[in-house]
Length: 313
Image 1 (cartoon, rainbow, N blue to C red):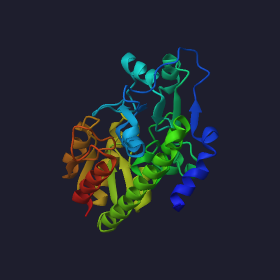
Image 2 (cartoon, rainbow, N blue to C red):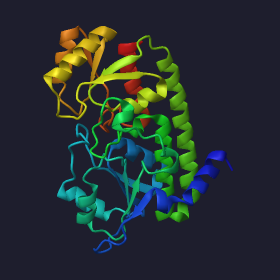
Image 3 (cartoon, rainbow, N blue to C red):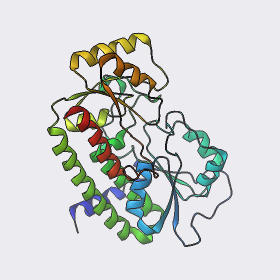
Image 4 (tube, rainbow, N blue to C red):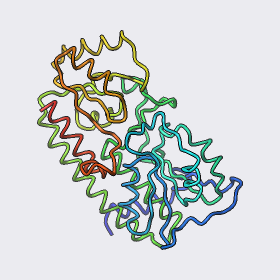
């Protein structure tokens, strides 16, 4: 048995207390949480998490992604129809760390006694790795005081994959071995991705960058880059004084590109880029099933590294 598989089995012992919240005490009528084909119904809040579930669950799961391309998780909330989708599921996978600020009221509205929710930020190996506003130096966009963008660090993403594997085993123990094998294989792919990104970023001649909001702090920390400034520390909130500070810093650092995000209006990024003679490029933390170069987690990360290479190599 591989060391990775052994680790997954050992960590599974503390699953209930550390990573999964069982919503079995909620009032409601039990629902059918499997499809006609017998697949386990799973909902995930964002595409990267849905991709993790697909890689671990394989043909044993049917995954629904709640947020669509262009949605910002910082302002998005589920529709009544999506609340029903959640209620019909057996497992719900969330990022945690305050990203899904609406979770409490949605779980109450879903009122499903069968629903299990796995918070992928609550995991033994995450302890001490989540960044607060004071630690990232930029502020953050979570009302819980923690930067939630952990999936953009491929090594932290491995921990999320392990949490998902353990949750699947909890609700479907008969397929334990298959979940463990799939998780082990996918974690190996993430390890290769980490090496690939490390090789690419080591060649960057410019180490600092300016992003739209603090989505890339974990990525920067992992690969020795500096998220020198953000246009909006909290999406939707900016000021002329902060804009001037960002412009001055961009000039001082010789920034060649300002990074916007497809989930937000690029006008503020374009305005700063025009002031300093830079171009606007797009980093995408979310991905989209409709974009072939961003329809899986690994392809999404490769896309983002290429955007950085264009600005920083």
